[in-house]
Length: 188
Image 1: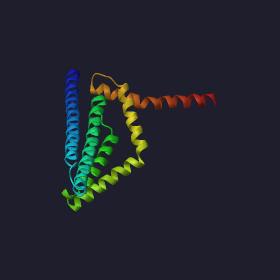
Image 2: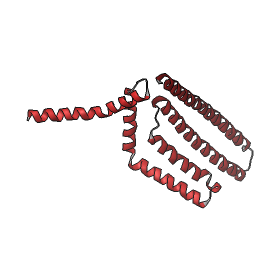
Image 3: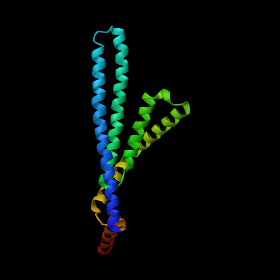
Image 4: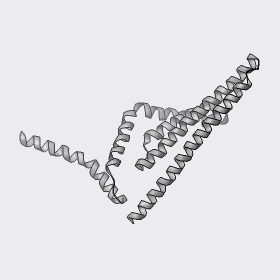
């Protein structure tokens, strides 16, 4: 049973690796074609009247900012995939970050595509995620670091052994503190 779980874990990690690789390729192609399109549009505006040029530049600026925002979301998605491949765990900090960015992106660039109710829901989600991120950043960061420390110390063969090892690592500091307190009481 243990080797079967290893094979399944390998398969899931392989799928995450392929997805991350495809995501990187997509980001590179999107970035290069986006820059290429912007350069072509800018070259077309060289011989235009200033008023026409300004209208084209407004459109280019919006498209360029949208491309950058989408790339940021894709980078966060890549980071989530790498985090999963490395630790077989996704930290809530990354989910909160991508939630904030996605809500802001949709409200800024695709405002007209949504109903009033949907815009309010996205605004509420964005503000909620932002509040969690702003007021609980230290907690999110500490949880991320603790999870990474625990999973680095764990390298068993089966899921049961992994859970036992995590339990041991988590409860170990408590036992050490109790021993220290008992020693101090005996000394007094």
